[in-house]
Image 1: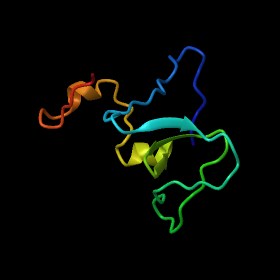
Image 2: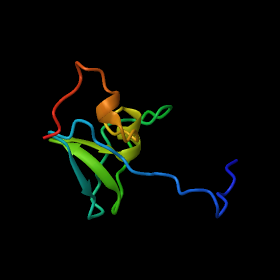
Image 3: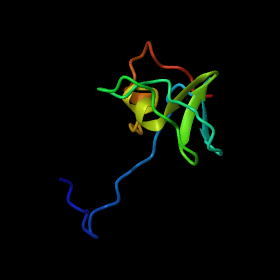
Image 4: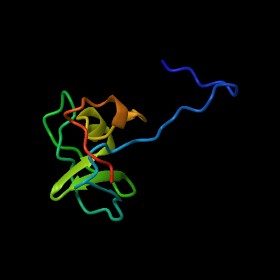
Length: 94
């Protein structure tokens, strides 16, 4: 069980980074039409919905919720991702 953060605890950094941003877009689902994440959650045998107001990323027809994009390594919480990649994986940011 999680204990609530005390007022003196520094706020947790919840920023997300998209290391290979070349072809990816971040968007907000602005309607209630059915749209599914391209990945199944562990232990599930179905694709889950992306709900209205939810942030998601897309690359062409591929659409992922943020949780799956993090789990698959498309998104990162590592602020220094550009330093921590192996030299063969590095791409210019500009």
